[in-house]
Image (cartoon, rainbow, N blue to C red; front, side, top):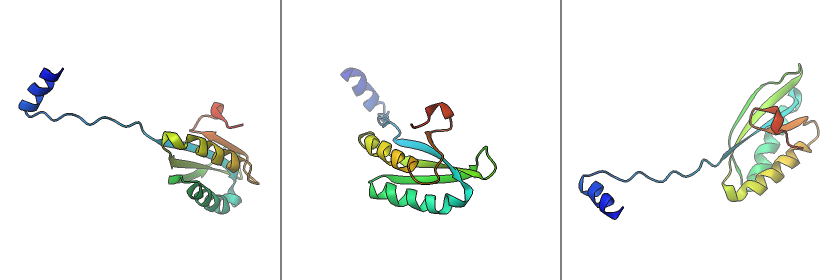
Length: 111
């Protein structure tokens, strides 16, 4: 292997950097539309206080009429996964929050 590396270096080929796993998690929160402004503020405050960075938050319509769905993208290194789970549980317990789940699929609901 060393001989091959030497050959590549002499040929001017640069080694490719090692890929680091993507440390991004997505939570989807379903709640009544009128609670979204307060919930959004609470998400940013709580996650930041826990040491997590919310890198994006998008809002769209839920399946029910007066409900909305917020997709929260969180930058979360693997060592902070337990903190993220704790924040997700606290989020689920907030008044008015009907559902919290990972990604876009329902079968991964957080209980």
